[in-house]
Length: 119
Image 1 (tube, rainbow, N blue to C red):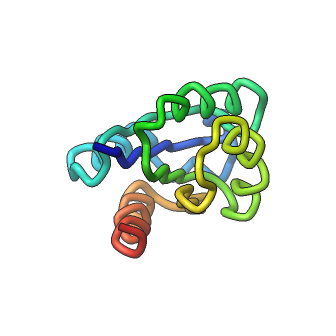
Image 2: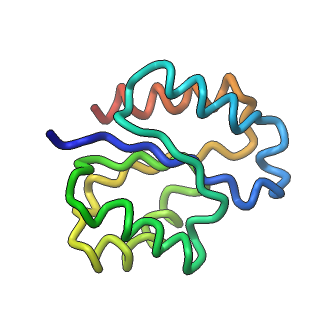
């Protein structure tokens, strides 16, 4: 059975746009909702080890959709393109969401809305 995965990327946790958010609170709330088969945290997907993480995570072909809450959706698509191409992951199955400058509650609500609009 194909899985729905979720990654919360927080720009090293030092970016001012994440200061209003409890990142572990977001992950816990989303995990308890059981809207994803797995949730994880990555400090910076846009660097080389982030690209490697994506390749390893998706290489088994078990993930059907990958939801990523992080920075600008267009930037995510550009930054992750090579990793997706390298392992044959369908870029249309990457669902990006910008959660910068949100509180914990706002981020969780936005994530739930992303899934509701992209089941």
